[in-house]
Length: 129
Image 1 (tube, one colour):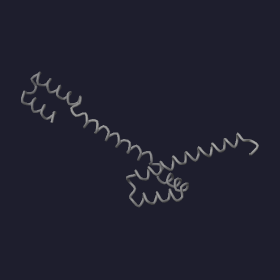
Image 2 (image 1 turned 135 degrees about the horizontal axis):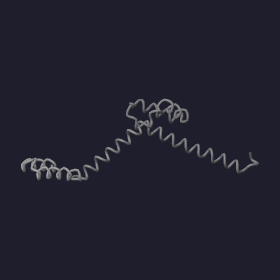
Image 3 (image 1 turned 120 degrees about the horizontal axis):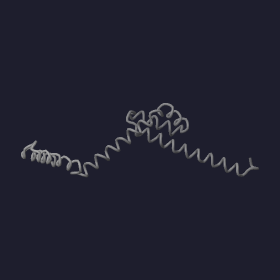
């Protein structure tokens, strides 16, 4: 192999990129262990010890045992974050277009005579509260 320095470079790069991919996988598994809601404290501790003490075997065993549901847990976490973000936007925006649309509907109902002025004021107070 010493006769082909370019081949040595190729093998070195290959092993380096495989090592980097394994590190990404290791961190992903550790993140999944700690973000998993269906594991208790002892389960998380056990998986963490296994992954850190026997890294290659631990990651392989974790992927076999719990890898099938990793994407489901990740999707649930993303959905929770998205919902929290949307709630924050709604709370921060306050009287947004939804409130204005509701007021416009009640004003239209009042203009057509379908609700009284008193009902309109009650609805307006309730919407703006």
